[in-house]
Image 1 (tube, rainbow, N blue to C red):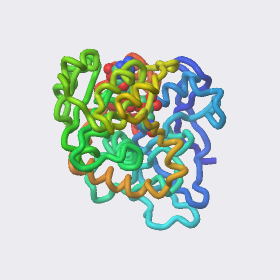
Image 2: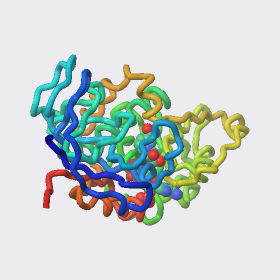
Image 3: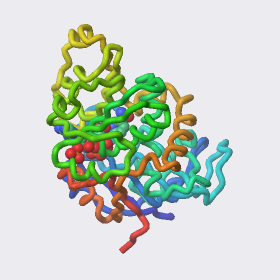
Length: 333
Ligand SMILES: NC(=O)c1ccc[n+]([C@@H]2O[C@H](COP(=O)([O-])OP(=O)(O)OC[C@H]3O[C@@H](n4cnc5c(N)ncnc54)[C@H](OP(=O)(O)O)[C@@H]3O)[C@@H](O)[C@H]2O)c1
């Protein structure tokens, strides 16, 4: 039997449950592609899953499982019925429902894989930004209905998911894109190459933003920042609840604030939305590739070997990261 290298979560718990192992080499079924993985993205959702936050929800993985939702690499094998891909071609795969990304071979539905050939995007950057930028494209076009000339505020501006929004907002013709970060990330914000007009301290929004209002707020942070954001919307404005990095699972919204401010809150969860709206995936991936190739997704990427997966998760929990963390299977030492 041929074996691949993978990082496995052996139980729910601390980062130390992540161990490198060997598992049977997966082969693609009909409609699928097997990818020789060079880079696997690490996201906050991987950390939440590993801690067991979603363990009682139907369909969520149970240990032992291989974490990871997005990979970059080259086409290894093509399943029956798949056209348009060539073995060896560089590709990136966006989140499917499951797991399996922290492995040297990953099998993905072909519909979620896109070729990066000709775009000149490094695989570490590709896996860090292209899947999130595709999701940002869907969120901004299909949920926020961003119109040309509108303004956008992005919370957690340097976070993995958030970092994909300014480039796509620019591509869609936003007139202004402002980010917010916590005080400790202001220095990193000053150095960022992401296309924000400015980045302000989320602890002091009223001073930092004066009376500025926005048409769209992207909020993967949640908690009290979500409530405070309602007063930052213009009448007709839309807040997109897109995550809960604050870990505040009891937060509530007063619906009368929506009425009085004449504003809307919509949820966006790619894992729920894309399977029921698959027609938006290809255009979003193309837009994402174009944006990243144009330099609109220049987030900081730190690459760690598989054997440091636990360190990567610890850094996510400690918040000692500058942008995105990516694991590589290439380092076998
Ligand atoms: N809707 C979707 O389809 C989708 C897709 C991807 C991710 N997500 C969700 O989006 C969230 C972020 O994921 P990610 O992978 O981007 O995580 P990440 O890279 O760790 O980024 C999280 C961001 O949130 C900020 N943050 C955390 N707690 C905060 C607080 N209390 N106040 C202000 N800012 C805070 C962080 O700032 P610091 O660096 O200062 O800690 C960081 O900028 C998660 O809930 C994830 O599940 C949703």
